[in-house]
Amino acid sequence: MTAGDDDALPSTPDADAVRSLSAADGRPDEPGTVVWHRNDLRIADNPALAAAAAESERVLPLFVFDPSFYDERGAACDARIEFLHDCLRDLDRQYRDVDGAGLTYAHGDPLDVLGRFVDAGWEVVATATPTGRYGRRRDERAHERLGVRFVAGDGLVRDADRPRENWSERVESWLADDPFDWDPRSVAVERVETEIDPETVADAYEVESSKTRVPTGGRGPAREQLRAFTERIADYPGSISSPVDARDGTSGLSPYLRFGCLSVREVHRHADERAPDGRGKSMFVSRLFWNRHYAQKLLDWPRWLDRAVNPVYEGFNRDRHDPDLVAAWKRGETGFPMVDASMRCLRETGWLNFRMRALCASLYFHVLQQPWRIGADHFYHHLIDGDAAINYTQWQSQCGLVGRPGLRLYDPRKQVRDHDPDGEFITRWVPELDPLPAAHLDAPEKAPLAVQREVGVEIGADYPYPVVDYEAARSEFRERYGAASPAAADKLGDEEVARRASLSGGLGAARSIAAEHGEPPGSSASDADESPQTDLDEFG
Image (cartoon, rainbow, N blue to C red):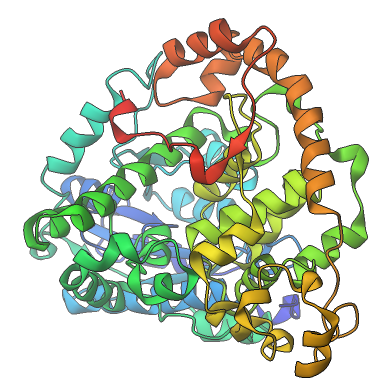
């Protein structure tokens, strides 16, 4: 994606077009409400739209194509942008299906565009969404300068001194609540005609993805995906870890939730009412809680995206930054086949199952010992379901930057044996290893030379040796990390750090860690496969 000719996409609609609409019915003092869509690309269970329809006789749904999202400052790959454009076309159809005029497309600095509507007397509402960096600053300015009202309704706890107190009960109550509703017959849905739409934007900014197997965006495909998954939800537990089985065995709903084609609440209700009881259903529902859990973390502390939660780990691995190691990891040429297959799959499809995401992050930070943000940004760029709240909080948690005892340190060879013993995933994405017997795919460099000659695969020529000595690098990292662990645990006793960590057990959990692990010898790191994950009962 490259920036196109600015003259081809002016800031639009201009003030004259907005003013002529606002006075169209002779009541310029009460023109109505603009519903500013961002990541809530649906008309059902939409708190901002429901609020606008309840307060105004007419609404104008608006999406602003922000140049900073498309030029060199943008953090999304072309495939995610194309998915977004699918969602926008679908949103336009949703409004037309209820006899509305459709979605107004605008282009330019969002505050400039919204300012034209505000100057013409329109109110502006949007759904409150936790975000960081640019989005947070944009929303703050929109509220301060233009009076844009952000309507909460996502189940997160805002304006509370201790948002984690009784958190799970609050989320459960929200999930059980009726969805936000509005009556299209009671309000006029209006539109400003512009020359901007997803096609013109894609052409102007040369958006053209080369990724494969990217799903079609929009509420229609999302609902069909939800229906199909609910029918096979019993197979879900056995599908989530293997990168082969997870491709079609998991829900596939994450990109639709990321862009708000479906709300978490309506997905939960659908699963609750239509999925058969069993482990698959309970595991999937727990993932919906995790979705809200990580969104709450970003809401509580927006710096998850660029600062280590625990200040003891700020800059950890920075002095070891090696651009060649980073490049090998990004290309999928580290000499660790499961990692390389995963990184190539990510680059080619914009998708990777959770365990493989964790494996790649672990090797990057714990073994290659590289700065975490470069890796996290790379993932966020390529993922179709790239959600800042989930991506960056998971990266920090996986790397161990929060200060909780123990490490989720994945062994890339064990992951091959456990989750791709026949080599189906590896040979799909690392075809140069296809001739090698599956028994050697966990550590190709150890394959006997006679075997390499027989099958025509030369390690070091056709496929690289490991870029680092795994055992030595892992041991070195553990020593370095362990030396800092007691100080990091102590820091969790600091209320400011505990609040930003936003542990599921609240401030009490952080203080317990500080008290128990703040002094040597501390706890030792253990393999991720043997370390229990946080149980859902700990929310509260």
